[in-house]
Length: 312
Image (cartoon, rainbow, N blue to C red; front, side):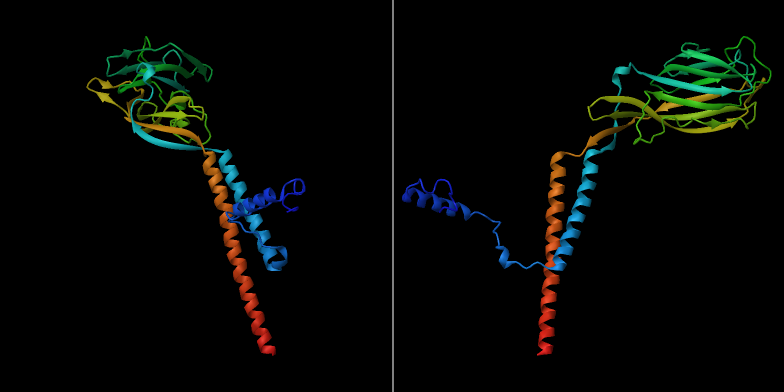
């Protein structure tokens, strides 16, 4: 009684003390984790070795799960929809291309599509940088296109006087659509033509780049969405002729939009799943370790009995 109630046992009446003890004993019946006195247990070297391995294994799995819980994962999905409905049916384009053998006065950008747009010599938000002491040109421009099939091309069509033999050899530094995404875990074709080198091609040849633009959405942990576009590309090179002779070459970018949208969602493992996994690791490891230790102990005891029987 004094063990159960060391401070109040002397002050309580015998009847109240007996009732309290009975209540405590009745409540202890629900204990499923019964305790075994230490003098009834037997420590072994094998059990100590298994216990150390068990703790190391649990620590390793715990750190692995903790790393996965802290880190974020990228989940992708496909669906049919126009994700950026607030864009007004426009797609922003960024183009950076070098033509080392064509003067800047001859270089121009033309845009046309199936909605009737036909713009020759686009100059808004663009600049031309002379190369090779003025013999070449680097064209950098940002413009918008409609979300319908069409094309834009770099050519000499906007020049006041057409050259006799324009050299359309070129290097594409950048061709990107929509907002720039800088996410390490997302490896997409956002600048598939970046680094394309056509310096060894026929100077009088036209170049056709056929693009299939795929809308792409990236949603971070806060729920903020960014809209960009990936694209696949196929290209061909040819020298075009008509009944009047050779057609002036150009660098064509013919595009069409895919109805499929790719969505990347940034997610983190829920806390309840992390706790469940840790409980499974701890419980499962201790259970398996206990089974292994019990089997080894039983086998060793049986072997000892066999050895004693042989000696006797």
